[in-house]
Image (tube, rainbow over the protein chains, first blue to last red):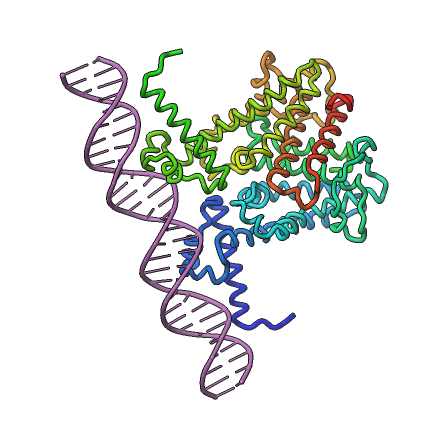
Length: 238
Length: 238
DNA sequence: ACTAACAGTGAATGATGTTCACTCTCTCTA
DNA sequence: TAGAGAGAGTGAACATCATTCACTGTTAGT
């Protein structure tokens, strides 16, 4: 812990406030409402002063995006911790519910993070950062599936399906304590992760409204069904 | 068919060209690139003249959105027709592949249609139109699942899962020739639809890059796995 | 033939991101 | 400790954007 000079501390506070105001604007008025001028207005600063902190508006929202990924990652990790026990299944269910709950409570943030790439710039600029930010959310799930595999409770996809498919070469880097990762783990994780994303994103983006009147009921049904396909007990999910 | 006056035909052409140019701009530069000024510039018109055709920019992109839904709906319907046969399973697979292919070939359009709601305005203004537009895509799938149900080839969710969940009151309106729709059909359709959306949207939005190197292989694996869970033959999907 | 709707113009207003030359203040070093 | 340089902020400027308004021709229907 190095001692921070007064200026450095003040700068950190400014950066934090900028992102705070940006997020408030995002929540209040959607992505188009977050503008440098609105931020500077709210902070009692000149617009050009903001360029001492971020080289552009896009860079600012990219930074906000990273923060948001950390926040939702922390929330799901907390849910995992609270679930406790030694059975991965309830932990997965708790994380899935926490993820959905956070998304519903923060729709605009969810859209910024997991919607289409913004302006095609935030990705071309720093693909590594974008990737790692998104990863820190999914990894918690990945670890649980790895644990299930270690216990032999993960049903492997049939050989003829997996045959010849080189799905993922580097996913093992994300799992602590195992430099290699088996294909069933990868497949089970990806399947669960895309399914979870599909249900939640569709609900949050409003694309399910025409078809389903009680999204939460459907979510719970899918969760139960998924756990059963995994081979877990139905009651384990509650 | 009523005879169109000169002026009416010319207006229709103008409307079509406006949406055409708007789409070209969207593809070339993302959502922020579609602006009334750019459109008018490209068409050799004044910006204010565009207000004779659409009351605002938002209304214009909303109209474009509807067109896009019709386009992708037509593409998947065409794939369904080409698949032919009397087995619904290959038809579902063909539609799923056609949907994914179209989305990958038209990423920006996909984002506009199935990303987060735009500005929160396109939805609050005309919820009915937005819903029906999105529906015309999913209904093709829904009909196939209804057909599977009629044949008795659809596995029902266990009673204790479905019990007490009033999932959808009005989905039956979408299925031709049946004013009531059974819960297993609804559940199977919703499950398939959200899964399909999850895989495809995640890939198109770039949220899968960190985890999977060959998205198409994963898509095919999921498709096969889903069909097997439905109770179909593995070979039927090819 | 006339009237009213239609289509288009050009100027204006107020919002936006970004740049630039300029100050003022803090921090570190010679 | 004095001065130089980096940090932080200002205000004007430029280019883009959506939207509105008064105005002018043109077409369609009575």
